[in-house]
Length: 492
Image 1 (cartoon, rainbow, N blue to C red):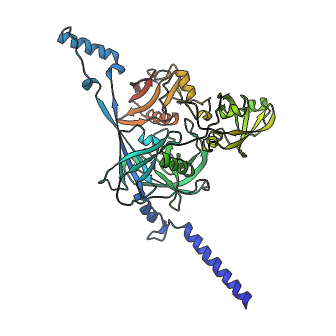
Image 2: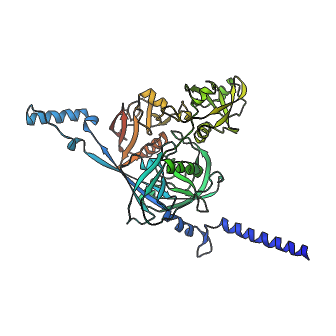
Image 3: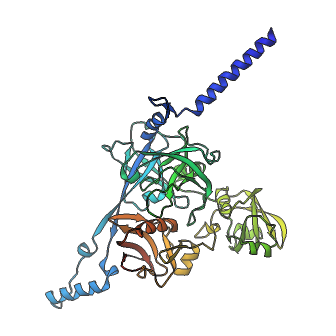
């Protein structure tokens, strides 16, 4: 009798555990009137935690920098009208500031008013306005707690007395290709737009200054969605929607999100100190081609990076790393692609010893290194020295990094944007010069901020789809900001 009762109790327990797990899996799903599953309930709960962000930035336009011939004409005209006396045209007439507006998304991560978004959404904004959910009647001014250009993340704060709804983070490492996801954001300024799709891929690298592995999704992400959350079916944030790949400027089903496990670490640091602390190894490296691997006697299929510079007095130098060392392992974890080394180093604690697996002169070797805080101007030198240029409209563009700064004498305080390193003679963009740093593109009254070569490629490719377009590029040329006007369509 006791054995029978024991079996009955075991089956009852299993039944209730199964029901509990099943309920957990469909916690976000309710039923439509026709009996099919719906996400309406979870969307109604999550939407109040998603915010719309609008920013304004004052931009000064100086005719003396953009058109010297017109400036000389005005000078001669006023000298003729007013005699030989000097006439000051004044700042009000020719250096009048204009306002540039942009839109984006974000989401609340606590009840106190902290908001996560992309760094490129708030950029150099002079004013950041927040509306919560779809209620546009209340506008809150936000301040920047901290931002991190390397991961394109920012933490904002609004002052509000009432407790706010917020979303929690999920585990992006456990999400699988094919899992359902939801994107909520301020698409094209409409606010509260919801789309659904799947995780299309993991570990995507976008190039430019980024070093993180992005999640790829086919959930529709459009202009204004940047900074909004990507959520799993339990309503947890698994990513921050950041970029799209599109030749037309619209959604084609290829969007990218920063994984939540990266976001959590960065946001915690920003909330605590307003900045991000990273480890520094003190090397520059580049990818290895199959031919190079053969010359280095690297086993076939081994992935890693070859060191091509070691900074003096750096952790790498102190540990006797050498140019030509092939690094394939970090603390026992094999590198799956080039970007892994930069990611592992940046996430490691300073002052702690790590072990690098490498191949030197054809032999495997393990070296212990104690990472330090950055002691050079560009602490992200580990992101590589040979940046692959993106080609668009006859231009070859790369990110702003130590190499491009040195080559084209770009001021140290300029970060982000896209640097023109080469151009074809037949390019329509002859007015752009080598070394120009493109920081924004203006088309049809809308200003597109350029934070990386990929963003430049996406924006320009979409503009080129039109038959004839007048475009204004805002560039930094030899340290001087200026506007360059280009008209497409008149030439092939």
